[in-house]
Amino acid sequence: MVETTDFRNGMSLLTGAVNVITTAGETGRFGFTASAVCSVTDTPPTLLVCMNRSSSSHCHFKDNGILSVNVLGAHHQQISQAFASRIPMDERFTHGEWTTLLTGSPVLSDALVSFDCRIRQMNDVGTHTIFYCEVEAIKMNENKESCHGLIYFNRCYHHIGQQEYKL
Image 1 (cartoon, rainbow, N blue to C red):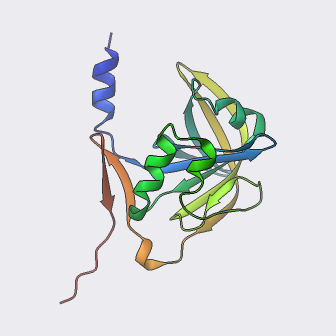
Image 2: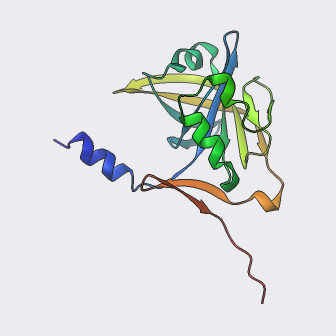
Image 3: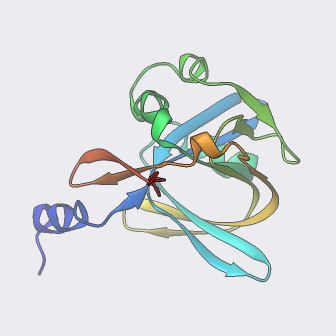
């Protein structure tokens, strides 16, 4: 049997892109920071997002049935930290500029890319719910200056991206 601590320590060495996952509905806007996001298939375009069921906003994501995955750039570390904190939800959204696409979920205006999704299926596994999300719209950042990604590795933020070198 693998101990929880050993599993968590091992997973800290699995590099993950940093994302802010958002939703909106009659009860307001909600969001959290996540690295547990990945592609499932391109036909139809589908992502999976894992969320802890003990989160106070979990029920809002389930009830709304929509979410946006906002992939953060290197300059978004403060936004990631805000959405990972216990500050009030409305205060989280004061970090960054937010807009919407088709579903109405908040989209970070300068995210590297935002995937606007409808939740098509949910499965509970252990402490988490896996949301299978069909992508309805994509907004890509065209600013080449903002092309460095924010990743999480060994319990720390790191920046990643191709640097241009002049000869």
